[in-house]
Length: 80
Image (cartoon, rainbow, N blue to C red; front, side):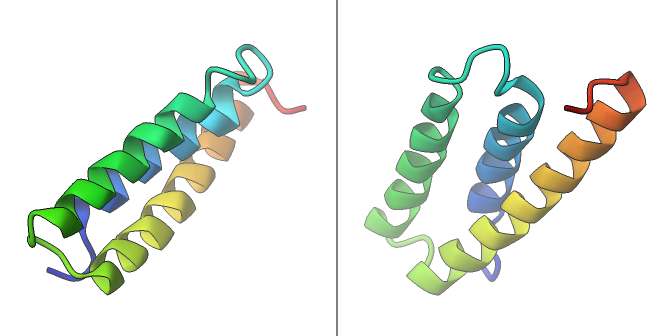
């Protein structure tokens, strides 16, 4: 159960979009983080994960999302 794959997946996607699209849609990009937080809250609410599972998954997802977003930007020549 540790780390939460739900948290890791959703925060990875949110961070990837933040890193790659923040210059195109700076306000809309935060909706992905709200969605990821809602998914994480629901996992705790229904009793599938403990808060520590969510925190571990969130940290993992944010790290992987940031790294993959930076690599994508570098590969596509979009570094700012």
